[in-house]
Length: 168
Image 1: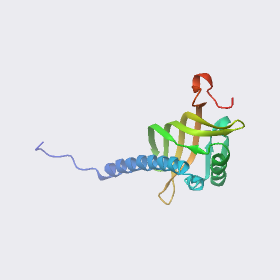
Image 2: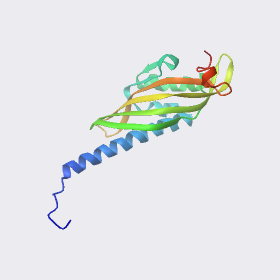
Image 3: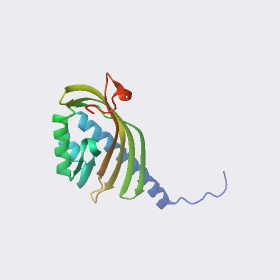
Image 4: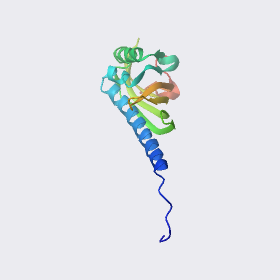
């Protein structure tokens, strides 16, 4: 305690700070993405992606490649399929993989209004997001690819045991 202290390694400290800031930035980006979609600002949510970014919702929501296509999908899905949503992304896991690349995984639990041929229904949606992020030359983190694996989109009054996917 009163002996000779190890010298402070500023390079190691800077690397740790950079990694911590990357994790915080990616978490904030995901939270902002969710808020923008819930606040009905789909074009702004699309702008969080790289120019060649991808949003992949699997068989249920499709794959959309390029920032413009992602933005268009968000506009269309809010108008035609999900007129109300409240994204709850839980159990975050964020890993900085390099100074310019990161990965994040969240569990989605989303009350929403699901619009289909039967009209509007209260639905619970759930699944996992597994996302890749990159830090641009401007120092801003953006989504390179967001992948949603759906586990259920079930009518609130029926539950996922009876009807795991609305309209199925």
